[in-house]
Structures are given as structure tokens and as C-alpha cells.
Amino acid sequence: MHVAEFAQVSTKIYAAVLDDEQLPRALQAVAEYVGAAGAGCLLIDKRVNRVRAVASWGCFTGSMAEYRSHFSAIDPFRMARAEAPCGHWLRATECLPDRALRRDEWYNDFLLKGGVRDVLGAKLFDSSSHTAFFGVHQASGDGQSISVSGNSERLDLLIEPLCSAARLHAGLVEVGYQSAIARGALDHLATALIFTESDGRVAQTNDAAERVLRLGDGLTIQNEQLCARRSFEAAKLARLIAAAASASAPAAGCMLVGRDAGHLPYVIQVAPIGAEAAASDRPMAMVLITGLDENCASEHELTQLYGLSPAESRLAVALARGKKLSNIAREIGVQITTLRTQVSAILRKFDVERQSDIVRVVSNIPAGPPTDGSTPN
Image 1 (tube, rainbow, N blue to C red):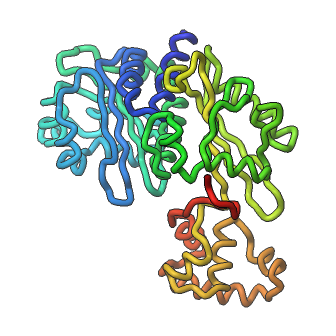
Image 2: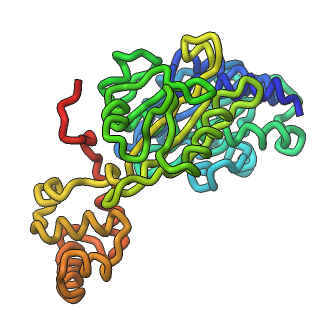
Image 3: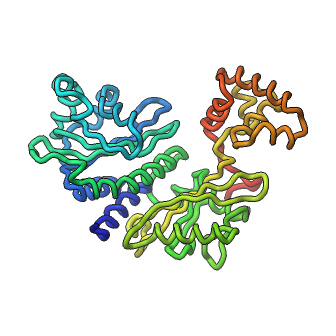
């Protein structure tokens, strides 16, 4: 299964998550691993329907500026991949019939003119704000096509690290990450980031992570090692960190870590960081910590944005955090009929029809930096 070669490609993929300068190396490694003439990736900001980032390596010679300004809006392959499930490989020349391809402006004036005859691509990540795409290229003069069946083992192996890396990168972009592991670039982030050795020893944290650790609410440091307070969570976290920092077969993973009463769990994502990207003599693990409590707007913001009453704002936030009406009624000591009346008012003010839409609206409002009541350093 070429474990060593796959490990090297995976390491380069994850290195590009934190450092944009590593992206060409990652694209080259993937293309060569599957025997393609090139590779490219694309990040779309769905909130403004614009290309956030686009890059390629290899045979393609077209202009990325032209893609941003014109061809992205008429790219039928991007539209086809957007409709497919994440991780599902599609071939550009099979998404459109031959007659359509012969007339298609994107295919003829961008792809073919840029030296690419065909693309085998997939959607890697999709959220309310961003979508990430990836593709490997067949050069115009290359008679041997890129075959899903012929490269199925290697393509299947790559999907997991590609999707994990895309998800992590898009998440960092959403919170303002600017690339490269440097303390000055990390401390302005509201999202907590911790870098550890394979045994969990903490090598670097940003300010947000230090505030999380000071709280001691779910995550702590013991004997210089990052760990969860509950033993079974500590064991799983240790396994994820060891797998991510493995020199032979690095892998990403995620888990939930319980917090004190009244708080939803932390979402912990652990990803490999190669020695070069980590400025270290060995691979490390990146631990990204987000709180489910932080993924929705505050009661005050809902009052300002939608004119909700304090009671309606409190109910909307509670619903967004997964609580049921019956439990909310019991917690605050009101009749459930009162809450149903408030739900109707919220639906009207949000201009939506279903209770699930309340959760969607509240969760999609960008949340401010988490605080613990202290002043950041």
C-alpha cells in the first residue's frame, strides 16, 4: 500500500493547512502520487459567492486572475461538484455531454487553452460559509486518462486527509487565520490552537488556548502534557495526538470533551503538522479547540439584529444550543404554551417558517471571541 509514500503526501497536505507557501508542494505531491500531470484547489466564500483562494501546480498554464474575474461564474464542473457529496470523484468531461463541451466557454477558453484536457475532482468540504474543491489534471497532450478505477486505491486513501485538511483550513480562514505558524499570527485568533509533541507535551499555544487552559473546564495540562479531565477522554485525546504526530502514518481526528454543567462540550480537532511547517526536528500535532457554546450569536446580538425581546432572545439561543422546549420550560419555570407563543414571535421576526430555521439563523451569525471574564494578555 506504499505506506511511507502515502505518509509523506499526507504530511505535505496537512502542512499546507497552516502555511500557504506549502500549498504548491502539497499539490505536486498529490499529483505525482496518483500519476497526474497537475493538481489544483479552490476555496469559495459562499457568503459573497466569490473565489476566496485558487491555486494549481503542474501542467496548467491559464490565468488564475481570469478564473476569479470571469470563468468561476460559468464553471460547469464546479457546479457539478457542488451538487455531489463530499469526497465523491467526478470527471469534468463526463459532467457535460460532448456537444456541450465543444461549445462550453470555460472548457475551451480556460481549461483547454491552459493545457488541461480533463480534470478528476471532488468537493472536499462544504459549510454555510465556504466550499472547498480539489482536482487532479490530465495534460492536453497526454493520451492516457486519469482513471478512477486505475487509481482507486490511492484516490480513496487521499480523500480522508484532503477532506480533513480542507475542513481545518476553511475553519481557520473563517476565524481570520493568516497562514504560517508564528505566535504573532496566532494570538489574534479567537479560536484556541495548541501544538504538541507526539506524547502530548505542549510546545506552543496562542492566547485563546491559554485562556481555555486557565479555566480548567474540560482541558488541563498535567506533567507538561495536554489532557482532558475525564480519564476516557484523556485516553482518546492522547491517541489522536499520537496518530497526528506519527512519522509513518499521520492521521487527523476529532472528539468532544465534556465541560462543567451549563456548557456544551468542546469540539477538539487534531491534525498532523510536519516538521518543516512546525519549525521542529520532528512532526507535531495541531489541536484546534472550539466550543459549541461559541457557535451561535449572543442574546444581546439577537436583540440588536432582529428586535427580539430578552425572553425571545434567551429562547432562541437555548434552541440553537440543542435544548428542547420542555426542558427550557422546566429550567426557567414557565408554561410550555408561553414558549410556543415566543417561538411564533421569533419565527415572524426571523422571517422563517420552522423551528429548525431558528437554529440555522442563530448558528450562522458570526460569533464574537469567547471570553472567560479576564482581559487577554
